[in-house]
Image 1 (cartoon, one colour):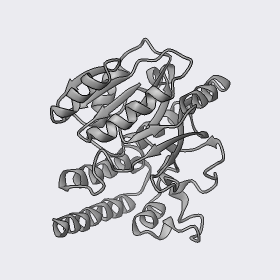
Image 2 (tube, one colour):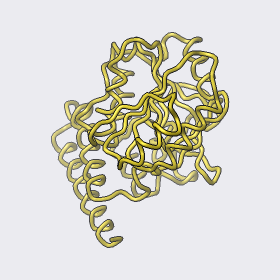
Image 3 (tube, helix red, strand yellow):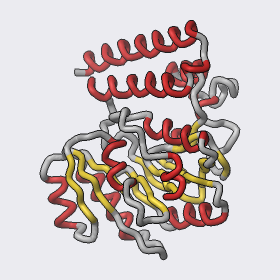
Length: 282
């Protein structure tokens, strides 16, 4: 199990405490990869959770930090878990059972619940199209009354309590089969933060491994708790660069130059707007 931490010691403490409470039958090793946190964070892990393996790194990004654990080949399954999550009893076990039942599944995601009890729609997603991305970021596609084509990014064909294959699950909880990781490869370290989970899911499907949403498994997700509820300048740039990288890798080769230019222009305009909003908040 890999948990990448960067600050937020209170959330990390809650995450690790939930792992202690929800022990599973199978042996497991929990590794915290500390990515450039203040000293208080790794010190807290060493002091309060001596059973956790702690690896210290500079702030190398989410993908590179997780790849430290993914490079190992001594585990049949690996769980990538955000420090702003808390697992409910039986969550890991339910996902392992799903993987045992279907050897074609390479990755399982769980149902993510927000602190107010609402559903985190990022728990199950469809790969974005230019139209669905535009609808999502303008807010139109987030309404349950919007046409399905505009809500496509949220995978509306599958209810929040329905189990089934989806294009993508959220990087806050990704339980992967080691054999699939060897086939697909690790997370793309070209992403510093954001979009690397969507990229990985896309590559799983490309290699013939299905991605599955399992609502019988539930985790609390304090969304943005570890990275910040509001993105700073560096995070905004990373988010939009990630969008561009994802499009360039998977969509640009099969789209017309005019469509590609329009998409890049849209990403640039959205980034400019986000930076202006960030500046005013400061």
